[in-house]
Length: 365
Image (cartoon, rainbow, N blue to C red; front, side, top):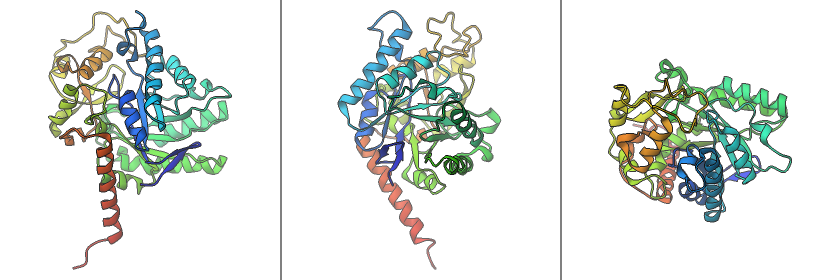
């Protein structure tokens, strides 16, 4: 696996740990991945629920909680630390400003197009900006808008395919369509990035995400032009993951048929592990009666099938009867708890084996 650069940052190990909320990827997991040379990512989604100690106000607690998590990560690593900030969050602006003020190395932003993200940078800012897209068209729109409005190009682009966990930037009928597969869209996004590189003389690495689980997956997708990969589910069943053991056990005990598409209050389809809570959602038994947080811009609690932030919070804490686990399409392959170091060593060994098989070519008879 070759290193690559995001702006002036050298990413020694071309693996970005995906941001997973609520409370799945915090400073513990992020710092462990960063210590191995990858990019550790803190998810700021639901941070106000995780840090009630500061005040009775969710938005204030979100700011203070994110500050604390970034500082905790910095105390544990000298590696690269990013923050995932969803465009769909009602406190998107606060989370971006806090990440930049705390000098997070990178902001990753998806679940919508972060068209105004560069507007938050100050002259002295060092934070790199990486949008998450699901198509070459979205990548083109962001590059054009950022360049025209802010004279700024993405420091990298994450292209996320339909096998990802969490919120998917696809319509339901596109999820199983080969024309929207990660293998299909990665070369298209790479071509778009190279176009803007030639126009403006600035490198824009492309990071592939969504359903990637093994070192062989990484090798295959990097052969299509990706500079790096983003992995989420792979790191859930690590010792350092910030989720409860009960949450990790949900992955370990899952089967392939348990991974399914659900309706998310964010307004996008989502991929998750089926369970009691999702069954209750289908029966209409989880409709919220009030909304004390208004965490998602587009969420109308009077029409929502459930409160997403409470569902994810409860799941992370181990109360799976009141929540559910987002998960990538290959999450069912997780069968034991390992350390982040062991997980990455296994990925590297699988990558090298795939590379060796490619060099040897087909066996002669």
